[in-house]
Image (cartoon, one colour):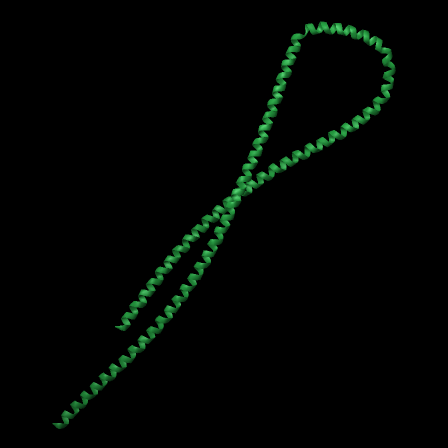
Length: 253
């Protein structure tokens, strides 16, 4: 009866160990799936972050290139302007003296011509009022077009600034998500290490239970052998006594 109870207890413990192993295996599979999903999400976010960084770098490179070109053009214009001014100044200072001499001679003639031109201009002005009005309207339209172009450019610059701000906010948000994922992966690694330690403890317990079972089986075998020896000796003694009794009865006859 004691041996049967021991075997039942051993089987009950073995069954409980298998269920615990199955439960832990399911838990490990669950965390493995979560880890794979997290890795996929991480790769996706890193890809989007790389694309966003490359777009920002291209935009920054384009703006830098435009600014560099505009600065170079400005410097070229300034240098060429100064050189031209110096050349013109030296050129026309000499010619000015010559023209001053000729100017006095031509002044009287030019005054007469100016008077004639004033009269002609008055006549032309009277004749060309409609054309002047049309030119003014054209100039006004051109001014409006220029103003519209400037307004569109300002709106475009504002939109670009707004887009850059949104991209920066998105980058910060993704950076925060990346940090949260890194923390999550760290926790997952710690959980995996804990599970591995628990599995090692369970394996040690299993080995200990197996050793205990082997020891108990050996003890049970020894007890059974001992009882079998006792029973055999008792049986042998009874048989021996029976033979003696039979032999004594024959002698009395």
